[in-house]
Length: 139
Image 1 (cartoon, one colour):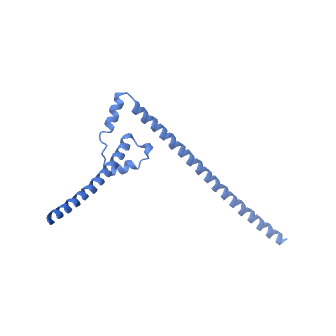
Image 2: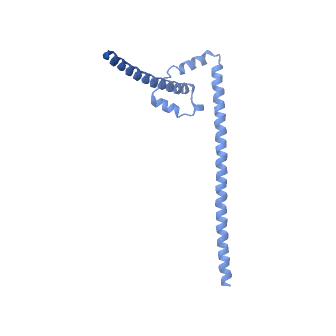
Image 3: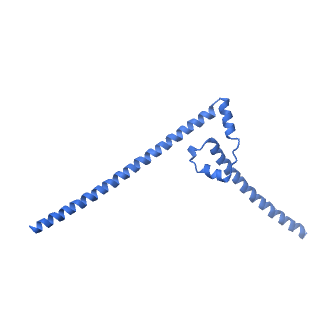
């Protein structure tokens, strides 16, 4: 009788353990499914937002309205930005940047590339001048 009671207790304990493990596994699976669905919804939302932004930009660019043209020109007046503003604008998702922010990022990158090329060419020119001076001095 005592053995039967102990066996029943062990069996009940095993059943509880299995039920607990099964519940935990199901909860993890449900959580993973929800995370996947959330990710898909976020991606769909980003695609839709990008499409809306493209339509807005296209509408602005195609507009014959002089007020819109004036607005675009004004927003592009000061496109040279500091490094801190560049970093701020660069941190914004491309699809969410305003036209001014996007143009400012591109201009900053082009200016930096040109400055780097200019420094390289200046250094090369200085080196060539020094060599020319030495060659002329040797004659």
